[in-house]
Length: 348
Image (tube, rainbow, N blue to C red; front, side):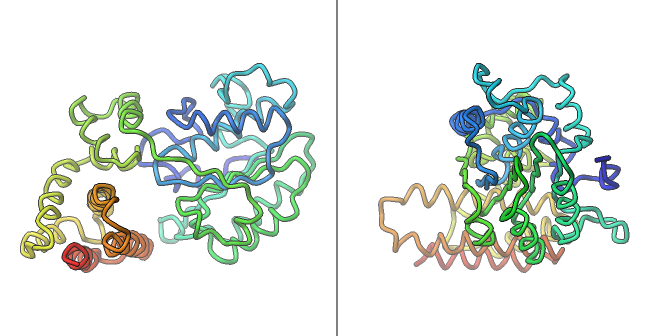
């Protein structure tokens, strides 16, 4: 299958200008999950559909591409039992084909590029799933593999079309379905998959990835790794364009709760809340969610009832942020609302 038109434009599943997961051959963390996948494949017991869940930026896609590459490079499970992990040499023909999206038995299902608006579609559409279906309908002697990145972006029709494909897969089919929020995946689709939940990385593991990427100096890398809640994507946002400075400002405002310096919050909202300030807004949300998470962990022994209001603000804020970004809305009202909700939750 030749690369689709979207390959000439920004890719929806690529984080800024960093290497795409298909171009990443080292996996940091998740050794237990990798070993379980390797053992299942070597024993020819790999499920036909895997739902790989966990927070953003912890390596879910890297693991999915690593497994897909390994299977395409080693089509006979019985011949891989002496291997140590799912690594494939980048010079292997299968690895090159996967990196170029030219492997005929592989399909990547993601948000595509809209030539009219010069932006990515906000959802994975049913027409995109139909293209994947064509690949599965072609004859193949080995595995046919589809990576979905990610299930959270499937619209209802696309999710139902994917469900039909997963329910009646051709022999030796494999669906690797990535999700940041497994509980919100279409229940009937989720029930057809084996779920693999990945834990956030440790701060040392995040630091190791940042070192490999050559991002910032050691002190900044360490500070970002400590504040990133196990997510490389969150750490990279903190390192970009004054992200750590913004993080310190936000933490100062949050530490004063339930008292709110509304003048400072309005200034902050004006600074990062415009429609064209997506990166700055993402850095703000990283800081707020990291603070809430630390607060919840710190008060974990004080009773669920005491923590419930803060946990509800966390969930509400994350959902509202996703909706605001998807619709490209002005984010300033959301920022003011988050601080008002946090003030209420911390005074309860």
